[in-house]
Length: 143
Image (cartoon, rainbow, N blue to C red; front, side):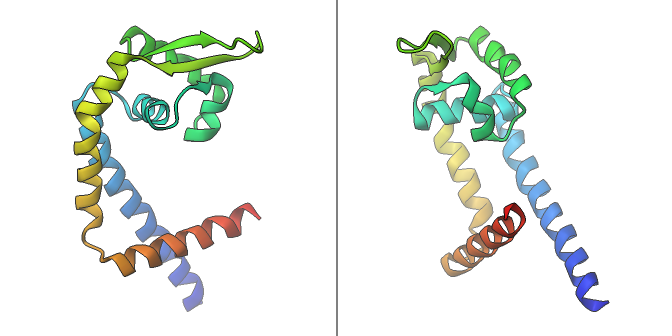
C-alpha cells in the first residue's frame, strides 16, 4: 500500500510543479499579447522554420482542428503567413514573417531567462537526473 501512496504523491507533486511552472511562463506570454498555443506555434516556426500546417499540431501537442484557428489569429497579427508548397498543392506551410521574427527576438530572451530562473533551484546534476527520470517515465507509457 505504501508503494501506491508514494505513486499517488508523486503524481500530485508532478502535477503541481507542472502547473506552477506553466502558470509562471504563461503569464509572461499573455502579458505580451499571445495565448500559450499561439506562442508555441510562433516559437516552433522561429526555431525550426516553415512547417506544414498538417504537422504543427503533432509538434506542439495540439489537436489538428485547433491549428487553423491559431494560425488565423497569428496571421491577423501579421506574425505568420500561409505559403503554398511549390511541390504539392495539397500542402500549405506556415511561415514566420519579419514582424513575427522581430516579435520573438524581442521577447524570447526574457522568456528563456525566466525559465532558467525557475529551474535554477536545481543544480546541473539534479536537472540531468530529473530530465532522465521524466524521459524514463514518459517512454514507459508510450511503449
